[in-house]
Length: 322
View: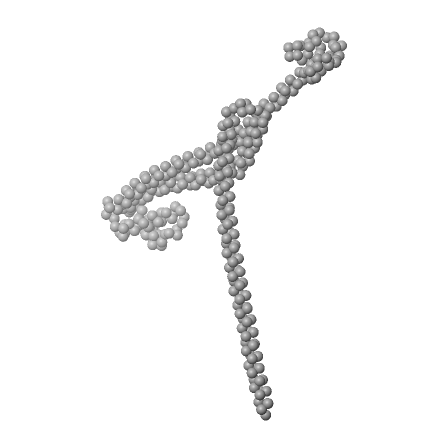
């Protein structure tokens, strides 16, 4: 049976303050000073604790760094998507401009047909073409509100094989121009949807990103308390720069919203004060009218009483003379 000595010298610094149970087993390990000749040195416990603390610090730095990068990744995913949509809108603008230029060429060629075939705007041939166009449009859209009864009669009474060359070619241009209009409309719709998505994502960032950035700052502060900037390295510097840039944008946006709200409140307050002043003026006018009416009644009463008094005096004088 072996016995082990526990030496407290590593904790007290006093090499004489040792007590233990001496073992009779062979020599132990002495490379790390943990076990030597059957004795465990408590001084090595301190080194083991420091190692565990350092491991926790390393793990904390790793976790904090991941939290920051996860937040940045989430924000960057949104901002990158916004950039993609804006880039696409720029492309849509260029594509739409090119389509409009091409469409203009066809409309000019279509208009030139009138001169080529000698078509007068008031001619029967042109009127027939205009009726055909209106009926054709109503047939495609289902909206007949712009079609007159005369248009329907004109088209219904025509032989589809009797279109003039001018009418045929002009309607062909309508088809081509219509294709351009459809493509332009689709591009405009895509642009509107992109704009709506951008607004939604920006609003989402305003609502959620600030909290995430604040958490990232707190995590970063804990990291800085636990280790030096050298431990964090360039990754932290880049992360901090990104946080500051995004936070500045959020602050500016919040200030703009605060200013807008303040202006609205001031306008409401001014309107309220003006309304109260008008109400006070109206009350004053009404009170003044009542007072004037009351005063007039008092004057009328005095006049009547004065007339009565004068008659009474005359009667007294007459009686005295008799």
